[in-house]
Length: 297
Figure (cartoon, rainbow, N blue to C red):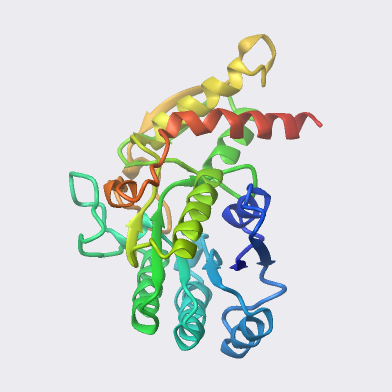
């Protein structure tokens, strides 16, 4: 089975490329230099040339704050790019797995979000991703939209990397404590994508929208405490030192883009297919250990 991966240079894409795919699968990774998804002709040409059995779209503009001042770039990748890929897949009858985000929701709901809850994004990034979802649904019937949340890993820019960098520079870290979500390891998303691909190959995958985010939830403050605690245990700083973490409110940390106060995703729908996200704390140590090791080399 030949699997074409757009966005292979991103943090999830790089985990997909180093994941343990079945021997019968041929992975064809494409980064932005190999395929500019904002250009319809380029997308059509590469899919025609590679003739995949499955397309996975991980390409995205993910700079949430910068998107507020660069809306054309965000929409070009997250909406138009997704539409170009989905159009070709729809014409060819090729299954498409498209990665999306918790930021399609406004965060006002008190409980976790289900797939059927109404989308109501509150920033440019979320709006562009929600529009990309609609484009996928309109262009092809054989799709899986996989929404995830608070992604982190060994590659790319993410919260874990930022906390480890700041922890080495500052005695005190002030972190937002009134936004909640599910920190999700990129490697766990890669494992879920492999499981989805296998179900598609067997003809057992249900088409539609699914949530996949780590089990359990926390605040950015709770996430930061766990990161720093792990790093301290692993000897990141001499004599068990490291910064103190102080909780603050969203109002005390203004950003260009508004964030949902509640980003917790209900993942029971995909769990019913045998694809269950692990607890968020269980995947974090391996990533912190890898990042600390990389800094020491």
